[in-house]
Every structure is written in structure tokens, then in C-alpha cells.
Image (cartoon, rainbow, N blue to C red; front, side):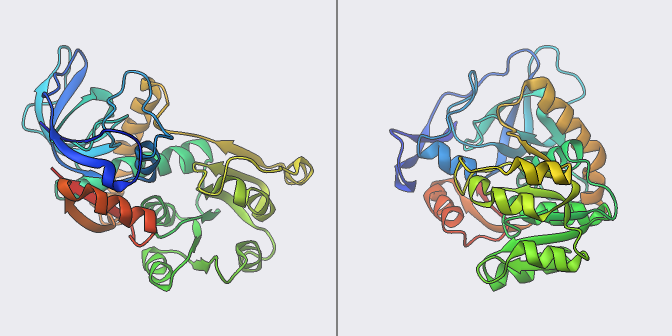
Length: 325
């Protein structure tokens, strides 16, 4: 198979396409002929040597894919060779073939082409598990997501809006702010020029946000707690702004608020299987009926993986960047 490999951690130039032996599915696993994979920020960290795969996972970068079932391991049921699928991975996506636990394989939502489907697994599982399964977003809740122009943000805006929440988001360019509004954000906040705490409070009569989905970590911790409504829930899924910050427990106690930090890749297999099943049941119908549209900025061949990483690193991409082997 063709796969992206790396001799040593470093910049995008360290990534190269090489030939490797085809993987073989073990019991409970499915072999997928990959149609496309997607670039996530976690991939950039792995490339730099900061985010190794969990024990037993492929050391090839890539956390999601779409493609066609090529072979079934012993004990697999419910799938047939030739089925079109998409999958959540612990690694291995930047390749022409990948082996996946059967519980992390999902059908391609109706109406979505096979390549575009690669843009869905990671964002859908991340947003659904954190915003709904963990934070319990409800209709009419106020939802704030940071990084509205990225893959997570563009999906979170649409899913929260489809579920009846009031959606606020932050972004740093006029292009991204406009796209966020098109996707359903009630208010897109330019974080370079505006204070998101003041904007959300003013728009909600001083109440604040019921749920905040944050990719910044330490840099935004204090302000995120400040923007929470009473009994608000802050879910931290990224650390682009650092890992250490001071938390005012007094402010959190006064609001009866909660701060939760989660990661998807390192979850136990059973947990990821539950999330994938819940996404297929609850989220895919919203994709199928057009309530949620995958946002793809570019589709590049696997040989241009370095350019794909540069696009994500620079922040120029709106939504996802896909790679086709």
C-alpha cells in the first residue's frame, strides 16, 4: 500500500509517500480501501513528535477516513466487502489501506459522496460526544464554540443550530466570520477586535453561555469561565493556547459551573464504539437531510500532504482539508 511516512519529527517537509506492506484485519477488524482521509490539528502535533499514537495503534498519521470495505476479519458481522464506509481511527489514515475495529466503522450518510465523507468522522464524533453526550446541550441553550472556521467549528455550528440552540462563535478573519454566519451562527465574533465575553453577555441579557466548546486551553480558561451562565459547562478539547493556567474556583462555584477536558483518540475502544453508534443514529440523519453540510476547503493528492499540513497550520483553510491516496 501507499502511505505517508516520516524519518524523524519535524516540519511538513519531513512527510513522504512510500510503499509499505498491506495491513491484514484481525478478529473484529475491517480492512478499508481508503478513498480519502482528512488533516486534523492533532496530525500536526504527531508530525512534530508531540502526540504519539496510543499503544497498539498504527504509527502512520491520520485519524479518519472514507473508503470501501476490502476484507473482513473473523467475527465481523453487519458489513460486506464493497460497502462504502467512513471510519474513526486511532492512526493509519494517511494510506491507501487501513485496518479499523468494526465498531468505529460507520455508513456514509445518504447524499454524501465517498471522498467528502472523509471530512465527517472526527468532527462528528468530537462534537457529538462533547457537546451533547458530555455537556448535554439542549434546545434554546446558548452555545459558544471557539475556532468557528475550522473543521470542528463549522460542524459544531451546524449541529448545535440543527438541535435548536443559539450559536455564537469566534473567528479571526472576515472570510471565516461570514462563513460562520452562513452556517447558522447567530453572532460571529472577531476575536482580534472584540471581547467574546462582552458580546455573548450583551446578546443574552447578561446570562452567558450554557455550553462552551474550547480548543484554546490555558489562554482562554479564565475568560471561558467568565462567559459561562449559571450551571454552564465548559468542555476543553484542545490546547492551542497552552496547557497551564490559573482557575478561579470561586467564580466557578458561584456559577455552579463545570469544566471538563476530554480527548477522543485515547479513549477505550468500547467508548469510541458507543460514540460512533450514537453519531450514526443521531447525527447522520441531519447530514442526510441537508441540515448539516460537510465543509471542505481543499482536496489534495497524498503526495501534497506537506501542503495540506501548511494549510491547516497557517489557519487559511475554512473547514477540512482532505487527502486522496
